[in-house]
Amino acid sequence: MAAPEISQTQVYEWLTGDENSRMCDDIPESACEDQPQNFMRHLWASLGNKLADELSSARLVLPWLMGIIGAPVWMVGLLVPIRESGALLPQIFVAGFIRMKPQRKGVWVAGGLLQALAALALALLALMGSGALGGALVLAALVCLSLARGLSSIATKDVMGKTIAKKRRGTLMGWSGSVAGGATLLAGAVLMLFNDRPGELALAILLSVAAAGWALNAWCASRISETPGAVEGGENAWDSIKLGFSLLKEDRTFLHFNVSRALLLSSALALPYIALLGQQQSGSELGGLGLLVIISGVAAMVASPVWGKRADASSRQVMRDAAIGTAVCCLLGALLVWLPGSWTQQIWPYALVYGLLVIIHHGVRLGRKTYLVDMATQDNRALYVALSNTLTGILMLVVGGVLGALAQWLGSSALLIVLAVTALGAMLSAQQLPEVE
Image (cartoon, rainbow, N blue to C red; front, side, top):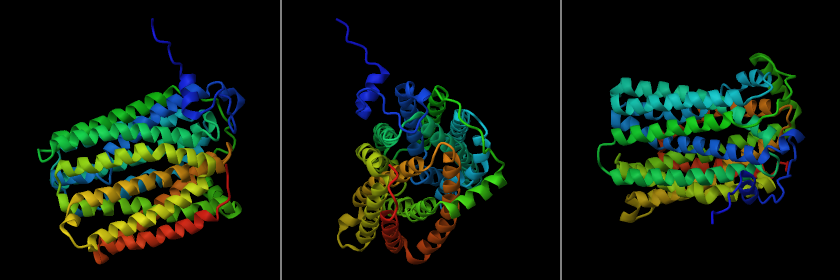
């Protein structure tokens, strides 16, 4: 006797706990019927995106790539600022353009395909790049990838706000992070098998899989059923900037959220410094990279569903608690350097702290994403997302540069203490935010 088929609706109801699939807050009534299949398409699209992000990480994978091709050390310091700010800075300039489109998923698809092409370019550079020229080409490909990521980011949140109801968005992002974490875990295990063997081919394969992930993201996005939305208020870039900054003056909650988000950058900025301490103990062998990738995958599997459920209940509390966790991880990472004993000279303790901070960082990301989407309305969501991301991109460049200078002067462990203090400021700021769920 054949087993009964399981429908997308049944899977959706199991993942969300929605027994009749009728939780449709804050989305058009016409989108309610399509929500189960849209949820699954969002889930698969997010899987491709998150997996690709992990396998092309500027915190882990690209520094190994730079080392293998012999790029100058100063170029390695540009990877994280370019990766983050390149995705965030241009968003205010395209918000008005996206707003003028009744359906925004086409922008999402274009961003996914461009990221896939950039990842393929990085894969080729792993095989053919060398020296300063190879490093410069890696940075150029990363710029293209980051700009395309910005397109996808703003369109993804806008489409999610139109197709997935409140009280379901955090759950969606949590499950996608968990599934992607499992896939990343498998990739890290493969890397550990390579250990000290030549890594050019392994990195090329890794980056090719990342390209496939973004291709999957674009394909799933193209299949989402998106109800055409309002196009009033679409503006050029300058008008969007003026309107955006006027909103910062008028909407005190939005301004307060961006202050909290800026302070929460401490979690993202601390990760490469903790990884750097571990890398100094293990060198550039792929076994060390594989361990850190595995730690990231396990952390994502454990963290994302829990944070997602909590974000649907109170994204403000998630941001507050994640800020506390960030401060603790930064202090632990700094403490390891000063503790006596040979065990502190191995990569394992740093990898464990790194994994704990990855768990916390997932809370930061899920909390602030859910808060921003729920705080905004269908009429202003694209602009709010774009303005907040652009402000964060500017801060990432400025603060990243300052922290790089401080790290050169004070050392990585002392810098982690500075970031711990910043995280405590984020905790106090997030605690004062109003609830939006």
